[in-house]
Length: 163
Image (cartoon, rainbow, N blue to C red):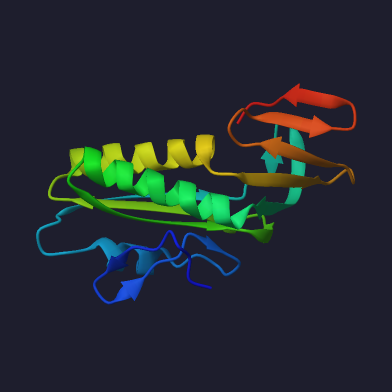
């Protein structure tokens, strides 16, 4: 499914929310150009632990219309703030340990702008885009984790987590 957050760069469209594995090379290709010598990439992968607990897998959920609209705003902000081209993708659905959950790419003439835009994108995505993470633990328990605060939500109420 092509998203409304897509940017037409060259002849391709890059979607933001996807159920499919993220193709980081395709994201890089979407922003590359002869004038852009600096390309910064951030890849967030599913890790096997959270706050001292063994994680088996994750499930990401999103309110797609709102997530796509907010992603588009964040990408527009980055491209207005720096002379960059950007591409982002975030998985939804079931992910296993080691799977890529999110990828952010920013390309510019120089590395400083590419790094700054890449950092801005991932931080804003985590803070503002309505994507929710459910963690499944080895002990059989399950918790929702708010990516913007790091707070775990269980039946007992929120508990602060360290990201």
